[in-house]
Structures are given as structure tokens and as C-alpha cells.
Length: 451
Image: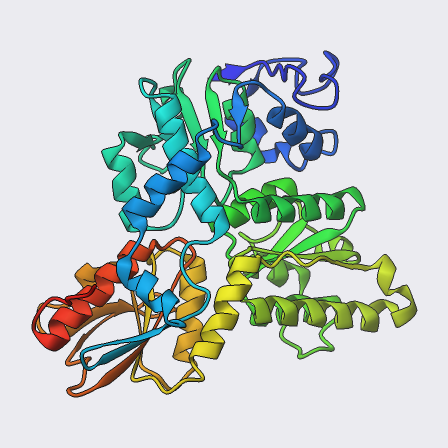
């Protein structure tokens, strides 16, 4: 399939008919794969003009309070209400539960769910598609199935089939956002776009666009193949993605010519080691002279800060302290909700706990990081996505932060028990309640009776 591009005023003014992207038919997906790095394409202006289109919506459809009341009824929990009303601690029988003071649904996730419900009510008869998971939670994903909201079909090699979308359909962007290439494809179709992208994610896009406009390379802390990072990369110019401090040290050692820890070597080795994590035609000798820091919003706060300080020190050593502002940029793009949940968990783990429960989707990065924090404590930590992972009998199937699944027998001891609980930002209170009810039933041999 090939098309001629007509952007219909989606960028600053309109693309000139002499622009090289419109001089002849061009493969859609070949063009999309490189468009975000095209120096003549302004992603910021494209997005600004897309937001102004009448078929684009990110504010809802005037049903906010009604929808939030519905969400509260469907996803709320009497157990959580009791915990919150009693300073996040309550005892049922011989089980004391201590809840982290910041946990579960964040504002961005609640907003995304609100937009889903409003869109379904606004367009009851239209076909509604989602490009990726709206939020990383299996309970909500099942709810979407019940609402007849479907994922775009994919080919055998996992390519999305945009041809399935027809005129008048509705397409929803997930809370983690989509790549600019996908925005362009969908903007060319006569569909309703409902954008649930978290404003914190959009904030990161703005920062990497600043890097690009000033010809700085973005060093992005995150997983290169994560849905959010894929979107962020598409708004950046030159970039390198580092998963952790070890990869950041490798990049910094290359910048310093092996004088940091000697872990790097040749340009060829650098490009091979990071072959899926750098922008097209990346040249570390030229593209690491001026750098800026960005991050996937769900990363560990402490590690992002550590990477930022490491890169700053590296650029000072390389170019001189007096020249740092010409070679290094840093903005705080750590999501408030992610940071608050990590800080609240640290506080919770200072208590005497017998067991730590982390509740959230197994493909949720922010939940993974909560489990990672828990694993560093001396408390046995169990990450479950639903209550189905508990029982029958005194057994639990849980996930470790490095993705291994573990099944454990006799995980709950006899006698009084103090359980710490937290939940990822995509986790409804109702899911936390269902997990606790399963624990109570296993521990006490009967379902919890509560007021």
C-alpha cells in the first residue's frame, strides 16, 4: 500500500506541495518509521494542531461527575475505606493490615478510565478500538471486553492492521501514549480520537522536544520496548535508552574514553551493545557531546536521579565545570504519583511486618518497581495481579521484580499476622479488597465479615 501524504494543516501552516514527503507516493510504514527524526517535521506543531481538530478529544464529554461516581461504585472497596478511615491500619480477627498511605489508582489512570466510560456513552453505536492496553491491569482489560472495546488486530509478525479501522470509528490512545507515527496514521483517517495519554507522559515529550530543538541527545531512562518509551523516542531527535545505572555507566565510560570504569571499548561495540536502544544513524562520537536527561515516568525515582547526577559529572569531567550548561540539560520528569507510591512504601516498610503484598498487573512497570523496593527489605514480598493467585490451601503464585514466577506453599504462618499492602497506579481498590478477602478466607477458614 502507498499513499500521498496530505497533512491538512496538521503542522505549522501546511506542508508545501514541494516538500519531499509529498512529491510522490511513498510507503506509509517506511515513511512513518523515520518521520520523527526528519529535521523538516515538527512534532510539537503536529501535536498542537492535532489537538485542535474537532474529531480529537482529551477532555471528556461533559459527563465527568456521573462517570466518576460509576467508577467509585465499580472499583471501590469497603475494606479500603475502613483502612483509610483508621489511619491506614485496621485489625480483622488475628490479621492486622497496614496500607501504604499512597497506593493504587493515580489521577492519570482514573482520568483514562473516565474517558473510556464517557467515550462508550458518547458513541454507543460506533466501533471503538484501542491501540494498546489503556492501563496495565487485567481486571480493567476484562471490563473493556465486556464493553465491546477491541484491540486493533495484528498480523502474525505483530504489526497493527490499521486498515481494519473504518470511517466513523472511534480510536482511543492509552494512558502511556502512542508514538507520533501512529498519531499521523490515525489523523489521516476520518475517525474520532479519544486521547487518554497521561499529562505526565506528555510532559516528557515536551522535554525531549526541547532537547531536539537545541540539538541535544536525549538519554532516556527506561525500557526501550515499553509502550511509553516507544512514544517518547518518537518525539525525541537523537536518543539512547538506558535501562539502569549499569547501562548509564557504560555510556558515560564511552564519553570519557574508558576513564570511568573501562567497561566500554570501540564505537562498533557500543552500537552493537545498544543496537535496539539508539536512534537511527546514531554516532556516539558526535551525538554524546551535548546530552539531556529524560525518563519513562514509571521508573524508580532514585535510579533516575542517580543516572542524572552521573551524566552531569561525566559532562563536567569531559568539558569542564564552567562549560556544563553547554553540554548538559536536566528536567524533573518523574511522575508525582510514581514517586509518592515509592516514598509511601519506604515508610510502610519501616514498620514491623510479617508479609508484604504488592498488588497490580504483572506487565505494570510501576508495580514492578514497588516489588523491587519491597524485595530489598527483610520482609517476604509477594506480587500478585489478582486474587486468583492465592490458594487453594496455603499457597501463593507470585512474581518477582525481575519477571520470574514463583509458587510457594505455606506462605502464611499460624497465629497473629501483620500484613503490609501497596498497589500499583493502575490497580483498583476492589482488586486489593479481593486479594485481602482471599487472604482472610485462607487464614481464618471463612470469609471476612465487616461492617
